[in-house]
Image (cartoon, helix red, strand yellow):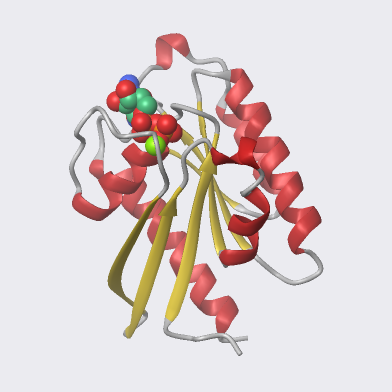
Length: 173
Ligand code: GDP
Ligand code: MG
């Protein structure tokens, strides 16, 4: 049975798209600039969602998809953040592939996902337009935000809060 007071979030995406940066921004409101990429990190914190105290576990993954642990990550989580960089078309293709794998492995059971285009401050180097992100999210029925972990504390927070609220409402169904 689902524990209604806990949500497990898995953060996935290509290398150096800013997965750790957006997680740290959300949790601490800070941007450090460089983050360890050698192992996964599990963060725990409590949030109040619609007046209910909820334990949130966030797994910031590193490059372990290559070692075959994507499957266990997908089984572990209930909500997923798929991050790409708007400056890297290849990372967008990886995000597309991850959303497809999520659907293949999780359906028919429902899962909550958020597509997150990061590094929107680097507009001069943009390779993925907003429309492309929007279309991909519509195709998968997931939420979509473009953010800059580097320049704005608000974007990552809004995106995570929206994901958690949706995950919580799904648990109540
Ligand atoms: P990860 O491998 O996906 O966890 O990526 P990191 O969070 O380690 O970030 C990779 C690099 O991108 C680091 O040098 C970060 O400082 C940089 N970075 C992360 N987010 C942003 C952003 O929003 N804008 C810019 N300009 N750089 C960012
Ligand atoms: Mg990282």
